[in-house]
Length: 293
Image (cartoon, rainbow, N blue to C red; front, top):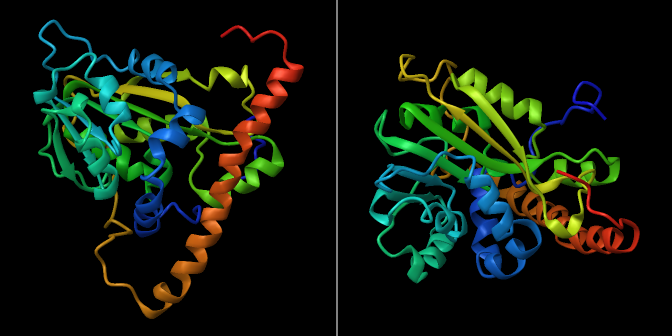
């Protein structure tokens, strides 16, 4: 099904909110590296994605921000190219970052608690921006990508690795209910609106899936864009005030709706913890040869 004929999403996913995502990761952080990564975000997928990010330099000294870095799995991949003193891991979840800080491989990295849609870095601060498995929780993905543009130096590159929306109707229901699974056309639109050029897209997926993509992928696409050397330092898109702030006081309605929304969102997310076993079983039984990339 093409992007032109794919049904539009109706509103945001239930966990595509800052407060809901914060509490979602409060519990997921306990098992993230042992349960999530092996089935959705493997070392091979990470290495293929980061090869596209333009991180290599003779001095290993490109100032890099890894936004939504969580437990540091993607940051470990960044350190294959960049020395730790030039790398900052930012995340809104202190529980995720506690896991990252405990990893010996990440010693020397700077850790910052912050918001992907309101980065605490000066304009033109970084040479490279990476973000893996974070955009799906952003209430305003255009704002997050605009921030990626802003914090980069001219000629800097921003690489985002994230989900792709399901084309299978049943899986599409669950991914839309859970969080943001963008289409490739949406990623491109957001990058272009921010001001990026030379946009490159790569496709990833667990090897055991043997190319099955119709049910959507939590990590299925890598997109990289470059900030023009002589362009505007600020993003081209004009955005109003930020729509969500986790620190904003909750109204009575917010409090009444929070727990039911969070629980239903958790159930929707559970579908994508069961799905990998079904897809891998199907691929093992019925797909004899892995499709060519």
